[in-house]
Image 1 (cartoon, helix red, strand yellow):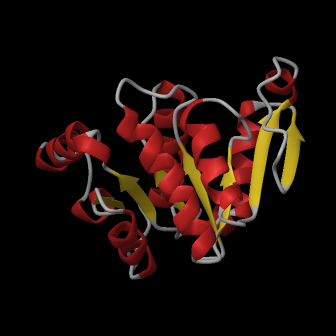
Image 2 (cartoon, helix red, strand yellow):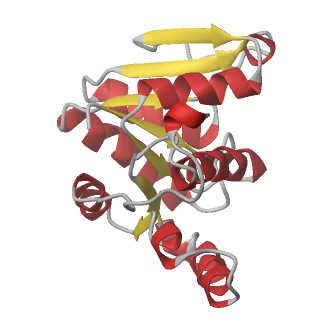
Length: 193
C-alpha cells in the first residue's frame, strides 16, 4: 500500500483519545512510507491525522471541494491540495489516489464515505482493504450491525468480512496488508461499471 485514504471527523470528538489516535495514525503512516490521502481540512480529526503525518515527514494529499476551501477550512501545510467541484468528485479522486481505506471515528460524512467505498468493494469496483480503527470501541455497534445484516440474510459473510477492525494501528495495518478480497463480487466488475 503506497497511499491510504483516511476518512474521519471534522470535529475533535468528546474524548482526547480520538485526536491522539488520529495524530498517531498519521505519524505511523509517514514512518512506514505510506502517503496519506484525506479530505484536505485543517479541523478536527482531519487536521490531526494530517498534522501527525506532516510532522513525521510524510506525504499528505488533501482533496477538498471548492466550497469548503472558501469557508477557510483548507489545511495550508499539505504536500498537495487537490480542489474539486463536488463531494462525489472528492470521493472518486480519493479512491483513485489510494490503495486502502482507514476509517477513524466520525459522523455522517465519515459514514457516507466509508459506506460508498464498502459498496464499491462489494460490487467489485475495487479490491482495496478497508480498515476500521476502533478507538475506544467506537465501531463496535457497526460490527454488531454488520453481523445482524449477515444473520438476517442482507449481507454475505464475505462482504461482512471486508470490514477489518482493530483498536491498534500497527495491527490494523498488518491486517490490511494481508487482506484477500472475496473471489466473486456481488454483481458487477469494474469493466461493467
